[in-house]
Length: 111
Image 1 (spheres, rainbow, N blue to C red):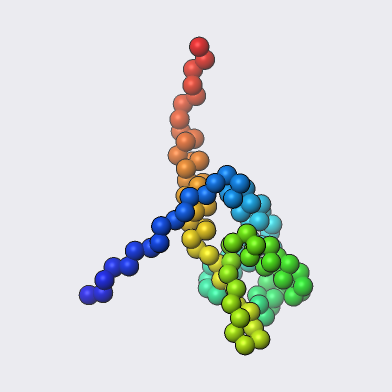
Image 2: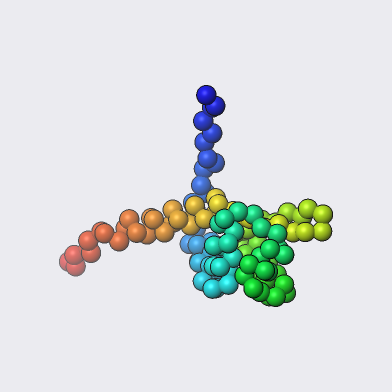
């Protein structure tokens, strides 16, 4: 029996960070990149083919996503490989869940 491995704790998001992530994810191209990378790490050449995007256009979106912390990149030889940062997506999920949990609260009565 293998020892259980606990996932690292998810860091809570502050409002400004959540706003940045939602702004980055609001772009249709970047959302498509997220969907593709959800299947696993991809080489930039595979992303350009799968998303049918020109390399300069894709590079711009990857740069924005990397600066926001949504993806990481590693170089292997001359190729760049991209992957999602699941911890950040979990933090965003928890932040949105906190909003949803407060939606059921009744309105405060006026004095």
